[in-house]
Structure formats: structure tokens, C-alpha cells
Image 1 (cartoon, helix red, strand yellow):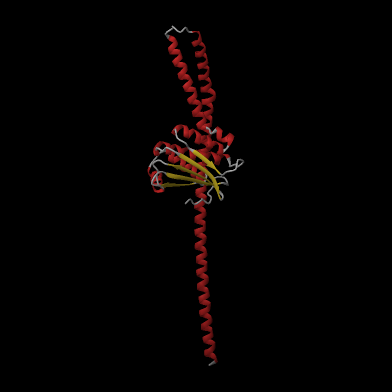
Image 2 (tube, one colour):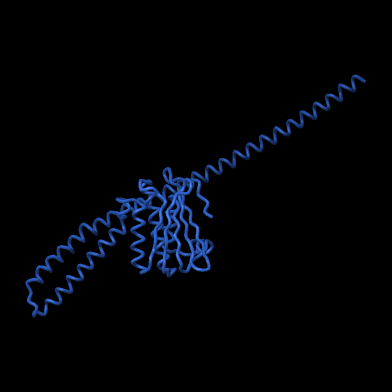
Length: 279
């Protein structure tokens, strides 16, 4: 009887040991699986960050080249045209009113004046000088005033951002250029009569809302256009959003619609960050 009891206890202990062994094996398998998943996710994140770093390098190179071209246009080509305009204006003063060439010279002076203004405008668009000098808030106020002149109807800009609010300059440029591209698209395709801009901070994110009464698109429309069209504007928006971890939300209403843009205020080295959820 004692012998049978010992055998029974041995069997029970063996079963318990086997169960512990199986559970230990399952735990090790799970840990290895989680480790592989973690390594895979880390690899994806590193790959994404490398892609963003490469993209950022390309954009920075483009911005540098744009700056160089803009300065050459303004400082060299603009200066040459200004000199030609001044010389022709001086010649025009010496030509009598009865001389037939006077009208041709006057016309050429006007063309040069328009060319100088256009070059100045192009160079300023290529480098957001005003943004760099005065910051995002004043630049958006100025942009709204310019848009109002274009539409011929009241346009407003409202901001809850402090005057001393500052962003990393490169991120600020990307954020502003994205707004500019969105606004240009609205003016070109939506045919609005009024536009309102709202700038605010929401938690750790900078938030811009563009509201208009034109032909709006939904988020689904935007995603379709982004994937199925090769427009430079949409490609530029996508690149800049990736660099600033930004998010866009399009909403269409019975009349008009809204576009919301948000990005984290603190971005380190333009790497992958937690994105804001717009709703």
C-alpha cells in the first residue's frame, strides 16, 4: 500500500512537472514571438525614419536651391533690369513728344517695370522672407489680407497663439508652405467667396483650420486624389506632412467645407512622432 502511494505521488509530481515544463515552453515561445514582433516593428520604424531623413535632405536641398535662385533673380537679374529701366527713363526725358520713338521707349519702360515687379514677387514667394522675419501669426494675417484683395470679399484670420510663440524655423516653413498650397488649391478649384483661417494650439499640437463656402471635398476625396493624381501640389503637401508628422482632415458640408491641419509643436530631427488625431 505504501509502495502504491509512492508511485501515485510520483505520477502526480511528474504530471505537475510536465505541466510546468509545457507552460515554460509556451512562455518562452511567446516571449520569442513578441521579441521578433518588436524587432520587426523597430526595423519598420528605423526604415521609416531613414526615409524621412532622406526626404528631409532632399527638401532642404530644394529649399537651398530655391533660396539661391531667388537671390540671383532679385539681386542680379532684378538689378540689371532696374538699371535698364533707369537708363531708358533718362533717355525718354530727352526725347521730344513729337518723336515717334517716344511711344516705343515708354512701352519698354512699362514692360521693364512689370518684369521687375514680377521678379520681386517670384523671389519673395520662393523664400518666405516675411515668415522668417515676423513669424507665423503675422504672416498668416498678411496672407489673409492678400487673399481678401484677390477675392474682393471679406476674409478673416483669428489666432489664439501668443505673440511670442516660436517654432523651429524649418518646421514653421513647412507648416506655412502647406497652408499656402492648401489655400491656393481652394482658390483655384473651390471658387469660394469667403475664407476664414483659425490658428490655435490644441494640447501639444499646432492647429490650423481653413473654412470656406466654395466647392469642398471630403477626406475620402482627398485620399483618392492623393493616391491617383500626380500633381506637384499634392506631392509637395504629402512630403511636408511627413516631415512635420502632420495630419490633414477634409470635411464637406451642404455649403462649403473645412480643412484642418495639425502638427506636433515639438519635433526632434523630423523623425516619426505620435500624430494628432483630428476629428
